[in-house]
Length: 371
Image (tube, rainbow, N blue to C red):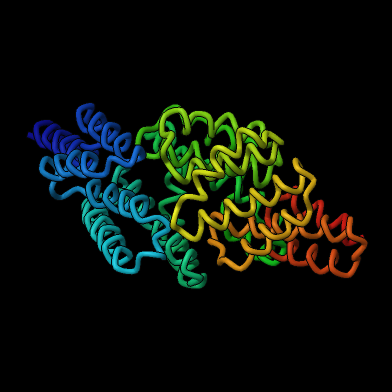
């Protein structure tokens, strides 16, 4: 009798784990997610939404549909802060996703899949708050996410989708305090990181994941540009994205930036011109800055460069994506002022660049101008 009881208990446990891990371990569901994401990143939003809806029909109590629709809403109306009505839709999807993930966690707090969706949802909520300058609110959400992030650090072999969050954490845990000295005293609260491991995990995530593959590929390029000062390496990741999703505006903007950084101005111009045609302020701002740098460095036309750059700096920057572009613009203006024999103006621009910049290459050049 006791043997039968324990056998039934084991079967019940296995059944619960199967039910709670059904999406990411279901080959058909994984294929649908992949197809839907490919349609979504190609801006075929009707097809992607239809694909995601089929997942909801099959798994009505699972957070996957709501997470995917939140991602789609942000991409379809990017940058989201320019579309206030769609911000509400975005938050509603994320809150529903979180509610369903937490319902799964209430039944089994070690449910790997529920942890993944809870972490993903909290990550998007924290980024949303940061984008809207609600930094203390973002910190509060990030604290809630930390529990799930730590579990993910231990589960990358069990569930490769955690490679992305683990790679970002391992890298930023070391890098961020190096570039933000004010937060160093608080870092002992957090688990140790490893920059080399973080880069390896990000790279693995570009190849071994489905759900976060594109995010991992984009941020691998972002990290190599921003902190590693290696635009050629960044370009290898962007090549993957542009080849597969040539019409994706965020990937086009990243490509224009990288090609400009490596001096491939003619190739960059193709993407800059595409950005120039967009109505969104963020893309207009980026395009004008890249045009300004091209005028300065390729055409040696400081007057034209200055006009582009000053026009761009009148536009607001996006905290996540174009804040560093403003820093680059100020740095370009500092070089122009130096050539014009205007040391005071040069220092003024260099200081503004230093204040905004996180790119190591930008900070290094601004520092050299201020000596």
